[in-house]
Image (cartoon, rainbow, N blue to C red; front, side):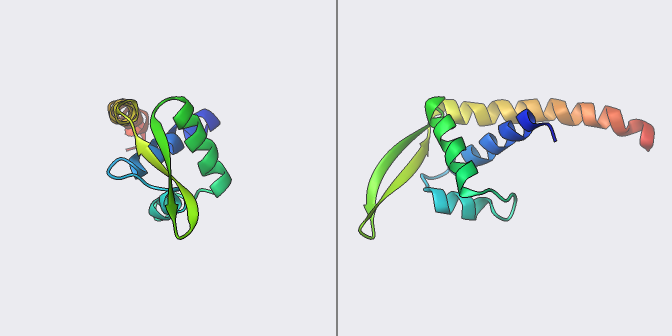
Length: 103
């Protein structure tokens, strides 16, 4: 798979993982595990990129005597998910065109 395409898909997956509630790194990986495997280093690179793109915000809170970073999706992050859904419909239409000769 094209690396840029995969990168974009992983970004969307992370945004979707925090769409309904704020979350932290380990939980994001756990929630995504049934769908996609992701290492911690990959996740934290994505989280930093999404934060710099203002698609999520970060807050720190104490949990069990340790500081934990919680990630919150922004309006820009939600809009990115919606854009992806629209783009994906177009991709699926192109896919249907490509495979029609094989049917």
